[in-house]
Length: 79
Image (cartoon, rainbow, N blue to C red; front, side, top):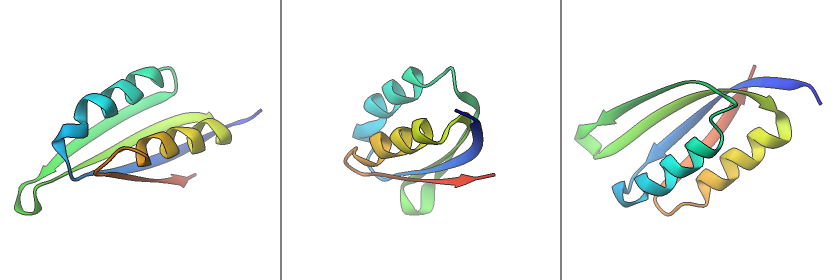
């Protein structure tokens, strides 16, 4: 299966989800090309962007697992 490059945007509204989110990110580290996280202090959010190079089904499963976390949402934008 051909790999796709995607940017996965993550909005973290609940810091209690950070350990679970980091566990998911660590389990996909072979696909992750880069990661940037910024706090949005005014609205008490964390905004994270992940560059991922993986098959489409892996990217979909990755974003789905992240979105299942309480207080977290994610969406992928494919190149």
